[in-house]
Image (cartoon, rainbow, N blue to C red):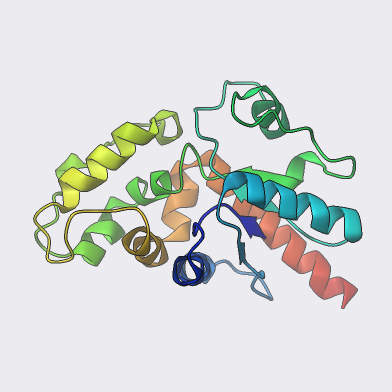
Length: 203
């Protein structure tokens, strides 16, 4: 599982892996995925592409931000092919189910579970600042971050910031709660579960 996130810092990449491991720990699979925190989205794509070329029958997934709301009817590979800043060409052996999005950004998943987020930040968090939109995947990055900062400004953990705090918060929210509200999370977890079961049968 090649993930966008963690920057160039060894410590942040470790925290990124830990956050995703904690987030996925309740997924009912027989084994947990190996998580590779790749830093930039381009590095994640390049490492995924290399892994797929070396072992085309291996189970590997690419998980990145969509950066922008995905147009209805556009599949993930079309989105990154058309998006300015990406213009990615789908690798020859890559299928639709290899590419997954964390909505516009990973932090979008945090606003999908305001209850767990409030428990993580403590009693002074302001849950009312979190958007209650039916379509959270349409929220842009600025809206998501402004909501998280407003909700956590007076907490003992301090105002929300991207990095250590965001990965710790990811590990504290419920994957099942996010799956219910975010279609791309549901798609990703369903595929992850399927891949894990296939690998166990092969073993």
